[in-house]
Image (cartoon, rainbow, N blue to C red; front, side, top):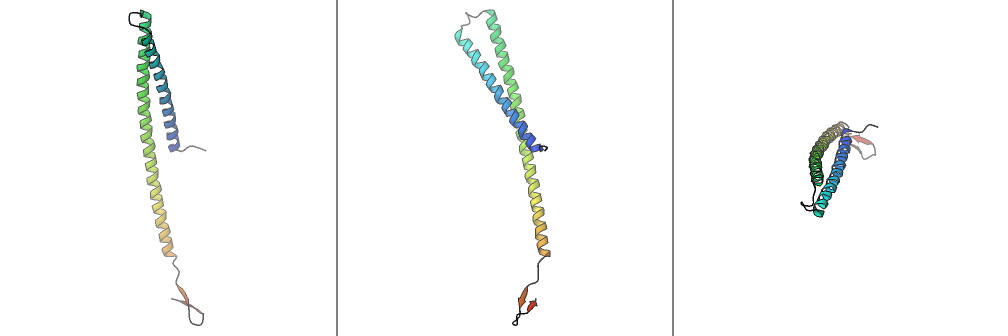
Length: 127
Protein backbone atom coordinates (compact mmCIF):
# COMPACT_ATOMS: atom_id res chain seq x y z
CA UNK A 1 0.00 0.00 0.00
CA UNK A 2 1.54 3.29 -1.10
CA UNK A 3 1.33 6.33 1.17
CA UNK A 4 -0.47 9.39 -0.14
CA UNK A 5 1.44 12.68 -0.51
CA UNK A 6 -0.42 14.16 2.48
CA UNK A 7 0.73 11.34 4.77
CA UNK A 8 4.27 11.59 3.40
CA UNK A 9 4.29 15.33 4.14
CA UNK A 10 3.05 14.73 7.68
CA UNK A 11 5.62 11.97 8.20
CA UNK A 12 8.41 14.26 6.95
CA UNK A 13 7.11 17.01 9.23
CA UNK A 14 7.15 14.68 12.24
CA UNK A 15 10.72 13.58 11.43
CA UNK A 16 11.89 17.19 11.06
CA UNK A 17 10.27 18.17 14.34
CA UNK A 18 11.93 15.20 16.08
CA UNK A 19 15.29 16.14 14.56
CA UNK A 20 14.90 19.77 15.65
CA UNK A 21 14.01 18.60 19.16
CA UNK A 22 17.09 16.40 19.26
CA UNK A 23 19.27 19.29 18.11
CA UNK A 24 17.74 21.55 20.76
CA UNK A 25 18.58 18.99 23.42
CA UNK A 26 22.17 18.65 22.13
CA UNK A 27 22.60 22.41 21.99
CA UNK A 28 21.21 22.85 25.51
CA UNK A 29 23.58 20.16 26.79
CA UNK A 30 26.59 21.84 25.15
CA UNK A 31 25.60 25.27 26.49
CA UNK A 32 25.23 23.80 29.97
CA UNK A 33 28.72 22.25 29.71
CA UNK A 34 30.20 25.58 28.61
CA UNK A 35 28.44 27.43 31.43
CA UNK A 36 29.61 24.85 33.97
CA UNK A 37 33.20 25.17 32.77
CA UNK A 38 33.01 28.96 33.00
CA UNK A 39 31.61 28.81 36.53
CA UNK A 40 34.39 26.50 37.70
CA UNK A 41 37.28 28.59 36.45
CA UNK A 42 38.22 32.22 36.21
CA UNK A 43 39.97 33.68 33.21
CA UNK A 44 43.26 33.81 35.14
CA UNK A 45 43.07 30.09 35.90
CA UNK A 46 42.47 29.11 32.29
CA UNK A 47 45.40 28.00 30.26
CA UNK A 48 45.63 28.38 26.52
CA UNK A 49 44.30 24.85 25.87
CA UNK A 50 41.19 25.43 27.97
CA UNK A 51 40.52 28.69 26.13
CA UNK A 52 40.82 26.91 22.78
CA UNK A 53 38.47 24.15 23.97
CA UNK A 54 36.01 26.77 25.16
CA UNK A 55 36.18 28.58 21.81
CA UNK A 56 35.66 25.27 20.01
CA UNK A 57 32.66 24.50 22.19
CA UNK A 58 31.22 27.94 21.50
CA UNK A 59 31.78 27.40 17.78
CA UNK A 60 29.95 24.04 17.98
CA UNK A 61 27.05 25.67 19.81
CA UNK A 62 26.89 28.39 17.14
CA UNK A 63 26.87 25.77 14.37
CA UNK A 64 24.19 23.74 16.16
CA UNK A 65 22.11 26.90 16.52
CA UNK A 66 22.42 27.67 12.80
CA UNK A 67 21.47 24.07 11.93
CA UNK A 68 18.53 24.29 14.28
CA UNK A 69 17.31 27.49 12.64
CA UNK A 70 17.58 25.79 9.24
CA UNK A 71 15.60 22.79 10.51
CA UNK A 72 12.95 25.06 11.99
CA UNK A 73 12.58 26.83 8.63
CA UNK A 74 12.19 23.42 6.96
CA UNK A 75 9.56 22.40 9.52
CA UNK A 76 7.68 25.65 8.92
CA UNK A 77 7.79 25.06 5.15
CA UNK A 78 6.52 21.51 5.62
CA UNK A 79 3.71 22.86 7.81
CA UNK A 80 2.75 25.29 5.05
CA UNK A 81 2.89 22.45 2.49
CA UNK A 82 0.71 20.20 4.64
CA UNK A 83 -1.79 23.04 5.19
CA UNK A 84 -1.95 23.75 1.46
CA UNK A 85 -2.43 20.07 0.70
CA UNK A 86 -5.25 19.81 3.24
CA UNK A 87 -6.94 22.95 1.87
CA UNK A 88 -6.69 21.55 -1.68
CA UNK A 89 -8.15 18.21 -0.57
CA UNK A 90 -11.00 19.99 1.24
CA UNK A 91 -11.84 22.07 -1.86
CA UNK A 92 -11.75 18.93 -3.98
CA UNK A 93 -14.07 17.10 -1.56
CA UNK A 94 -16.45 20.07 -1.49
CA UNK A 95 -16.57 20.17 -5.28
CA UNK A 96 -17.18 16.41 -5.45
CA UNK A 97 -19.91 16.70 -2.81
CA UNK A 98 -21.56 19.56 -4.72
CA UNK A 99 -21.42 17.60 -8.00
CA UNK A 100 -22.89 14.47 -6.38
CA UNK A 101 -25.59 16.54 -4.71
CA UNK A 102 -26.55 18.04 -8.10
CA UNK A 103 -26.62 14.58 -9.72
CA UNK A 104 -28.84 13.21 -6.96
CA UNK A 105 -31.18 16.20 -7.22
CA UNK A 106 -31.46 15.90 -11.01
CA UNK A 107 -31.92 12.13 -10.73
CA UNK A 108 -34.77 12.60 -8.26
CA UNK A 109 -36.49 15.15 -10.52
CA UNK A 110 -36.49 12.67 -13.38
CA UNK A 111 -37.95 9.88 -11.22
CA UNK A 112 -41.04 11.65 -9.83
CA UNK A 113 -44.00 9.27 -10.10
CA UNK A 114 -47.53 10.37 -10.89
CA UNK A 115 -49.81 10.52 -7.90
CA UNK A 116 -52.23 7.65 -7.59
CA UNK A 117 -55.52 7.76 -5.81
CA UNK A 118 -58.64 5.59 -5.43
CA UNK A 119 -62.05 6.39 -6.79
CA UNK A 120 -65.09 5.73 -4.71
CA UNK A 121 -65.22 2.07 -5.95
CA UNK A 122 -61.63 1.32 -4.89
CA UNK A 123 -60.18 1.51 -8.42
CA UNK A 124 -56.90 3.35 -9.03
CA UNK A 125 -57.04 6.78 -10.63
CA UNK A 126 -54.04 8.35 -12.33
CA UNK A 127 -53.91 12.11 -12.15
